[in-house]
Image (cartoon, rainbow, N blue to C red; front, side, top):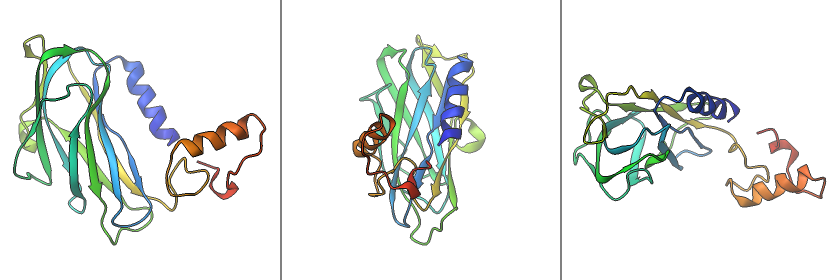
Length: 193
């Protein structure tokens, strides 16, 4: 988790537009894991066309529009190279950073602790996606950095300090109470996240 946060901070500090897949974690085989395709340092886009490729053992359960170019998502109807191509088009330019896409994957039932499954961004012909980003009525000339993500099998979810199987507001409250010296229900076995 700290490494992922550090990487995100590095990309944000470059000031170059960056498209990245967040990392996800699963505790049990057949878990559904959500990862996000995020756009950082958005120079102002109205459209995008790129592919998502993923480990052949993952199953893409669903995908949904994010907040950056919402309401205009289309995808190829056929799965391509264990992935899909996504296209957005909007009459409005948006210069906010945020989520382009939400992806929900089912991890393999027989997945073991320590295994990880790659989720990649592609927007070149060689990988079956002809893509890029639209800025001010033309294809963006600016270079976009891409960063792939992973879904990793773990014995506990990072951030689940009360060990209830989810990372939620209850964990944040427990951490806050601990930090101000109040009684906390943090399970010490799971506190090193």
